[in-house]
Image 1 (cartoon, rainbow, N blue to C red):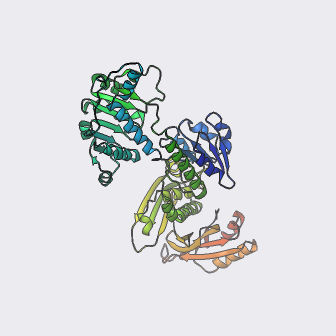
Image 2: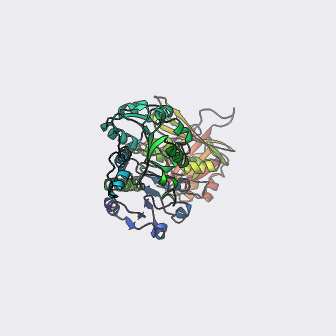
Image 3: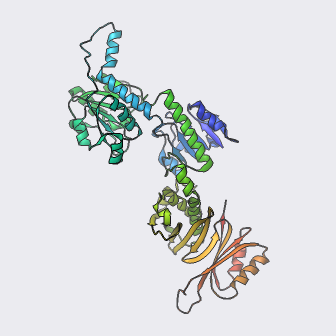
Length: 530
């Protein structure tokens, strides 16, 4: 396993990689890391390295990109997903640092600290000019109640501030536990003396503080942004500062970083600026460096994706419970793809028993990985399976059957232009096992070399199979049979299926001999790689 570290990382994080037996750790820098991409299984970055399609094209072995920090603006998520590369970050690792910086900027505005510092250093003593005000008793509006927003709440409460919050993605219970009042944006704008932004930059939030928003705010409101520069319409902010509608703005982030020469806001009255240093503390860098190293090691060793950005993430315990079912779903998809005929158009996943109460996104992706395994040259994995299926025009559906009497099983239906192939399986002693094909009960382990047959239930078929395989020196490890309870048409023989596990894959020439018996309607081999 080759770990490529393209930007400075906490020494403890590097040591964690170096302690893994058989792993090679390459410590590079943003100017030279590209020469090591061809051998990299993992790439560690912060914010300077831009990871787009050209970088990914040079890294054919790459499995995971670890971003030591929160934002992943420097990683092309669509390109990474298409390449089947997991992207993970470390949300919350620098939450305290950013929260403390937020309060520092609020105090800097309240007490005119930057201008007072410059004036005093210039030999002036302008006590009256820099009359400030207290944070105590002021209303703070927090937009975004994630890990940083909640840390700001804790610190603002120590200043005896009244706190309002807006976040459409949190519950009133979470807000209550944090000790804040959850309100809509209109009320937050109207009542806040300070407004602090802690939202991600999305199409919905881009430019959220624009002229209309400023018009709803108190006169003299002060704005703090330690989140993303794209959240503020900077031209509108400049006008609001000039008119006095906004009494001050403290920005740690900007729409373009660094801002270009002649940046208009530099001349705005009441402006405080810092160079995106909210999370730049020794403690935060140590935390995110070690945390991303731990996450990458966990993923490469056990497949557990913690803080994944482009695939369903789950805890170690959740993954431990679902892991055997992930394998089951993938092998059901692979089995269905190998025995189906025609061009696939729809994949349906049905979950029974306790599985129906689980987050099944990972199981869905696993089923798609298997279903795609026979029909695509592109590498399909849990990261990009959904994207590949959509690009092929497949419909993907899920159904959760919460019947308490039903065991924990997964049914996968693959619909093609020739019909529907349905397979169902369960986990027995932590191993994936097939229990039903096209509605016919028939058990077999989903492992090793398997030959699937459909035949008429008439005398001589089992003997024919044994003779053909014996004649070709193919050893049978297990033979499982099943048949329908009633004929498909009146007067016809019952339809039967056979699952023959062998020590080696049955070649096409031998399958052709099996099909020489008129009762054998279908015979195909499936190979499961452990």
